Amino acid sequence: TFQQFLMNLSEPNGVAVAVGILLAIIAEYWPSFQSLAPKVKRLWFFALCMAIPNFAAWLMVVAGYSSGGWDNLFWPAMVAGFTAFTAGQVVHTKVLQG
Image 1 (cartoon, one colour):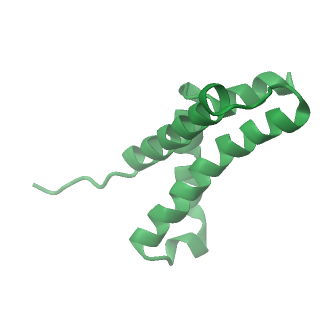
Image 2 (cartoon, rainbow, N blue to C red; image 1 turned 90 degrees about the vertical axis):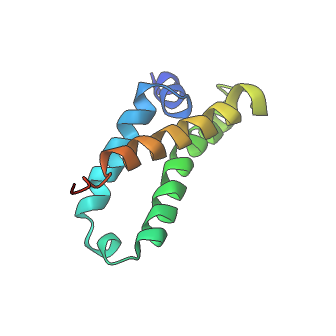
């Protein structure tokens, strides 16, 4: 259901890891993203990773699936966004030459 889809996007679980990895792969092939400085790339990637679960949480409130609240909806969405960001960064860690 749509409600379950939104819950999966806004909770820190395996879906957050998959979203982070998918976003990292998509960003790798986006030409205008590659032209940015590394710090700017990281900030944009963080903002996108945080926006997706928080937007899903907001949609849950607007659609009437949840009454909102920091502890039970928006904090888990923040954790899910950070989980996605971390997973995306781990996927693109450079291999150090020894």
